[in-house]
Amino acid sequence: MSFPDEKAVYSYQDWQTWEGNWEWINGKAYSMSPAPTPLHQSVVGELHFALRAYFQRRSCQVFVAPFDVFLSESGDYRSPDHVVQPDLSVVCAKDQIGKKGCHGAPTLVIEVLSPSTALKDFNEKFELYQKYGVAEYWIVDPGNRAVHVFALADGEYKVKELYMDKGSVPSFVFEGFQVQLEELFRLEADA
Image (cartoon, one colour):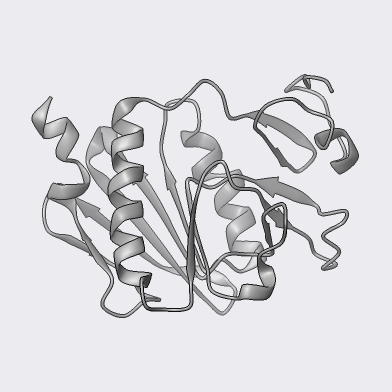
């Protein structure tokens, strides 16, 4: 086992030898350390609770990081092109769930911004999720009390909505699913 240099280019075989939680995007290593802040974890917890309640009697599964999502253009998940760990993943095809994670794009991915991940979430991950067909992508920005929602249409994120401060954030893919911003950012209001 080893620790990668975040400036070098690596293969999937290299990724398999790394200690700890790492994402591997376009050959680059991205450390998933240090641990997220209490605000980040509070937001992830609120979202997980809302998603689990919504999917309780439905066929989709909700996963919280660390949970590996393997993306492959060829469909060969023994040697994928990228490995990411979204904060939350909703997987609706049971055959995508393998022993080590998700094979292919989840239906919904939610990333909660941290200062160290914001650029990656808005750039590299946005491009990956669009390219590999994540139907809906949420970027939650606790610092600005905002949620960016992107919905895929004809292979591109054409629906782009920004929800801020108060009100609800609806899903474009899952009818009836919504999250109240006041609940989502409750920890900050109480701090």
